[in-house]
Image (cartoon, rainbow, N blue to C red; front, side, top):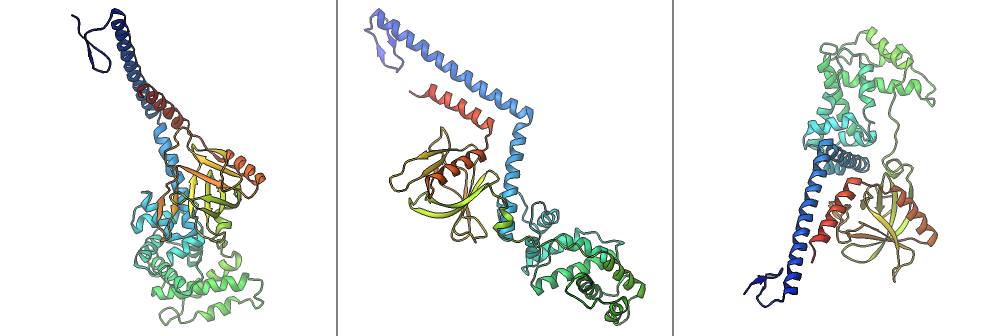
Length: 400
C-alpha cells in the first residue's frame, strides 16, 4: 500500500486516487510559492546591490545626516548647550573642544549671538572651546584693527561684561602670540582693543556728537604699553582705519523663534492627542522645512516635539471627543512608531512613541488648510517605498 504525507506532515495511507492527485497538486503549489519567495528575496538583494553600486545609499545617509545637522543648528540657536549635546549624541560632533570650536568657527546656519553666548560661558569646557576657537584665527602680520575685524565678525559679543572680558583676553593673547614684539604685554593689546572698539562707537554712532580726534585718541592711550607709550604711527594708523571704515558687527538677529523659524509654511494653535497618556493638550505648531514642530508656549525657545514628515501620510478622521481631526501616520505600517523626538520635562531629548499623531483644529476651515499645507510639506523617499512594497509582497506570500 502506498503511504503519503500531506503538506502538513500527516501520514495518509487510505487516500483515493483523486485525493492523492489533489495532495500532489498542493505540494507542487507549495514548492512554487517557495521558489517565488526565493526569487523575490533575490530581486530585493539585487535592488539593494544596485542602490549600493549607484552610491544612492551613501547619498541617503548624507541627506539624513544633513537633516540632523540642520536640526542641531536650530537647537543650538535656541539653546547652545542643548544644541551641542544633541549633535554630540547624534554622532555629528565629537565631545572635544577642538571639534566644537571648528563647528562654531565655520558657523554654517548658526546664530552669531548664540555662538557668542556659548563662547563666553565660564565653565572649564567652554573656556577650552573658546581657546581652541581663538586659535583657529590667524592674525599674523595683521594690524590690531584688521585682526579685530576678523575676530568680531565670527560671532557677536555678548552683553555680559564678564563674558566680554574673557573673550577679549583670549583675543589679546592670541594676537600677541601671532605678532610677537608688537606689544610689551598682552594686557596692552587687551586695553588697546577696547579703546579701538570704543573709538569705533564714538566715530560712527550718530548719537555721539563730540567726535574724538586723532590727538585725543593718542592721549587716551598714553602709558598703556607696560608703563610706556605706543608708537604714534601705530595709533594714527589704527585711528585712520576705524575712521575710514567702521567695524562690520554682525546684526543681533535674535535668539528666538522669529529667527529660528523665519517665514514658516504655517503656524497656529492646535490640540494634540498624547502618545502613552491619551489626553488632549493645546500646542503651538509650526510647519517649516518638511518638519512639524510643536511648542507648549509661543515664547518657548525650544520645541517640545519635532515630527519629520518624510514618508508619512495624512488623513481626516472622526473622533468622538474632538471635532476637526486629522492624523499623521505611516502608510501600510500602522503599528510602526513614527520617527520623531520630544523633550521631556527634565530637558532630555527622547524618541517619540506615537504610531500616529492625532490633531484637532479649531475650525473645519483651519483643518483643511493644515491638511493642505502638510501634504505639500511631506517628502517621499522612493527607495523606502520600493523596499516596503517588496517586503509586503513577501509577507503576503509567506502568511498562511
